[in-house]
Image (cartoon, rainbow, N blue to C red; front, side, top):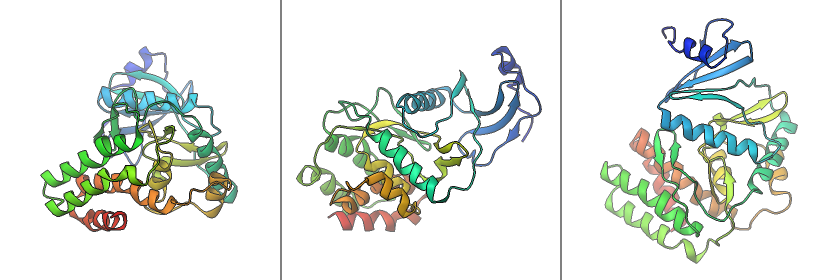
Length: 278
């Protein structure tokens, strides 16, 4: 990767580099660097301005929630550049898993009156519509399941029978899923967006909105799962009896997203989830 051309822009913001930017792995969507500066170690992300503004908004919302989870501080936002505090990871261990569960439970205790968010954002590269809605079942149906199902159908990744079955599930949510006050959720909490630091567990790269808290749990368990200490701390004796069904439901949205982004290799997982929910 060539030397980035934004160092002068950072200097104009009062951020003085002490060394060369180091590209970071995982920048498949945005270009990401780590930079030593007079203000400490920072991460610089370059992407389109609208996407980065939404990410900065989400980071600030998570920090303001007041949970014990570490969230990187937004140092500056300048068009297509987002400058954040850098975090260093350490091995988690059982205590780290428990701290993650405790912190996520604290985050989800922050509730609002509407499902959704004040603006749209992205889940990976996929636009994520967050139009506020008073009923969580309607929000899940109209802004999550059906838009992605229809997009997969239009690209030939989901056939008419699969789309019809998905529609039946979406239309039947009121039959079993209660409407509850919407929790603040990270929105894209796969394992790669969780870091364990010397200060405790941290969450990065959010796609925040308010919805059912199981959204984050389902994503966290989609491609692996945290240990028993996490669940003991998170549920704190209050695991809902229908958690397995909720887990399957809220994994369906990211699975549809993976089908849309990465193709037919995810079709069987989508259809398996649909069959479990039918």
